[in-house]
Length: 360
Image 1 (cartoon, rainbow, N blue to C red):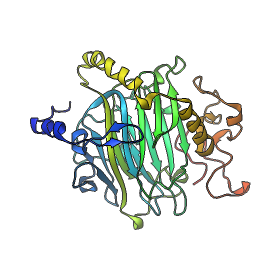
Image 2: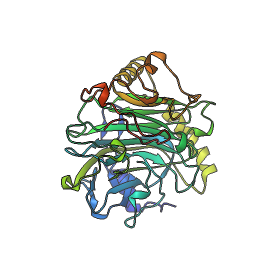
Image 3: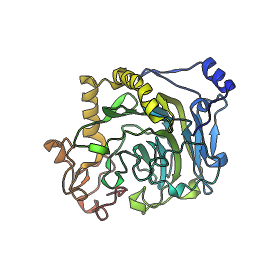
């Protein structure tokens, strides 16, 4: 269980000047007020002003940080700048595997199956929940890909994954990536544009994430799957790989994993505040922006992956015009990356691998 903050830390928290993230109208916090070192020794570097952190991957280790507390729903956000040049095999993640303590050494990144996430795998073994932003590196000249995952009750074998390209170069400057997680719906944001909405329904059953989660960020070597299903691996000639995290936001109800019933009652009001916040209201303008993004940049959807899932998920909103743009394995027929002939588009590996890639 996380130790109570010291009086000095509380004074710092109360006296610090928070800054506003203009587009989504939320306030940021200093790194030490919300997070702690997870793994990577000196590969996590705090900024001099204490408001941001740099994660480094080199041939010796990746690195990561984790929230000091568990949260019962919330809005979690960070501005992230990704490594440039050759980044095949590199995985940067925000909102991930939950460890309700701070670890300074001895962490094995190979044990992590995914990353940006929120999760609670250490407390709810085999029934944990996850909400992920995963950033997948690529070979030189190829674009970073982003994957979002929604796992509830240990449902990684029936994962609700989607993958996208971007309208900008995420290595030039930082962009904001956010997850809103409420009792009724989940919204993934890039900057101020919603890119995915998951509405809780009876059809999802226990697959809807509902347990208290921690928040984390990592950079690590995903050579076994991240690029071309492992064909292109991390080349440490281009190390160090550096990702910057700033404008950190943790807005939600902090809970005690031991006293969860009391926390649930106390967090009901906080959840209502989340549901009525500006970033939770899906206006017609926001929905139109989300539809445009998905039409232009979504390259994989579990809803159209009939190869892996012969029976479509009951909570999928299958749109025939959208479905026609995808192959039976869920990959888009019209990738925005370099144009290639049909002969060059390879059929992906066997069904059942949630991390597979049809192309680099």
